[in-house]
Image (cartoon, rainbow, N blue to C red; front, side, top):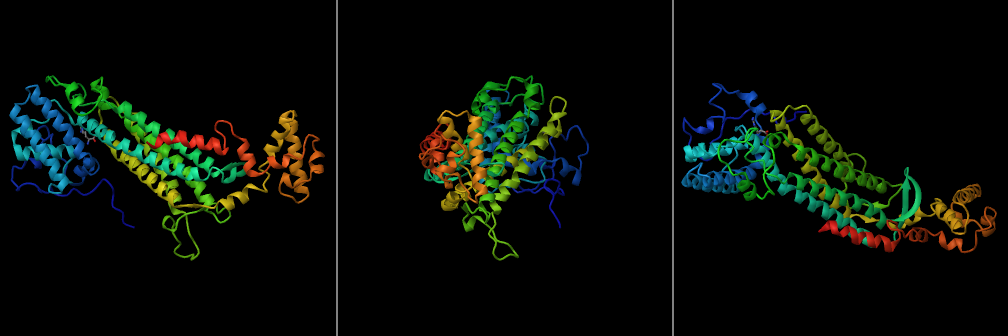
Length: 485
Ligand code: ARG
């Protein structure tokens, strides 16, 4: 099987998509050409370049450069004319890239060099002045933060949409009884609405985690330079404000060494993905013929190439499987960062691929999960049937005795003996025993027990905060709605 490597590609020759080729074209040069007489060529250059990954930061890179040149102009580090020319050209470049007129050159070292190269090609010395007081170290830290300030709220929105869909379904099923499980053994009767609210509650925490990460990354690293700021009279407050940050970062060395935002968000993605994975495990179980609690839409299932009868829950399985990828990316990031001496090291270039992959994965899985749930049919009759005949009411029978004053341990024993009696008599529920049989285990049992033991009565009786009673689940749904806005 031939597989295209993701990052290490054969270097392609530079493509001049925006200007006539000149022999002294500045795009032939890397940004560090002055110090080193030779540059790595071919495969070696491609190995260390990051354009294939950081090209997605192009608009953030341009936005950061616009704020930077405006500040350089305002500070008199650049003439007003030069600053204005650079700004205008950066706007042009963004427009051309959007329109597909300017193609990002995959032969460039990274997105920062690419943009500076175009500016220099078009504006000469003005282009050569854009990097005053800046390093790619603070530039890339800025670009990623700007990207995350846009991307993270999108993911929060996706989580909100998934929660909204779960709650819409839950609302229709506050009285649809189903077994609740522990150890994958039927445990106590709950409702489908209650079960879906359990999922929604987990996603609600996920949404808060993403929002929380956003608060901490909302500081602007621009002006940190390579690691120690600049002797030029930059105005970090101004660029931070122009770029919509709460302020500049506190310490320049920390600004270029720090990848906490990547670690945190990768962890947030891994947790969200782990949640989705568990929900999908439930769905895959429910879709099995032996359960048939859920009937996934045909458009959200796949068939088998050999077994004609199959309708497989592939979407659920794949979402479940991608939890491995999200956890892997998190481990990748921690491992990359853990041994690095301060401040910037090229190892940090490895941060983006893992982080972007986690964000893309969670984003896609949330959308797929939502579509799968919105189109699924839940078989409430099968769920109700599974809620009777498995002694799910045993705890409720014991609590009946507790209400009549019996110590719980004795009540537990009486109910357990009833279960044994029923099994010995070939019956499958406590309710199918006669009153005389019930009273042989405890004289406290009376006729009113039977009304307490129906599945819906059992679920409805647990009306504590957090319980499965229909009115309590309706309260939970209303409370969880806040995560959908
Ligand atoms: N491509 C680099 C990264 O993603 C940009 C910073 C490069 N800085 C450097 N000193 N080589 O981290």
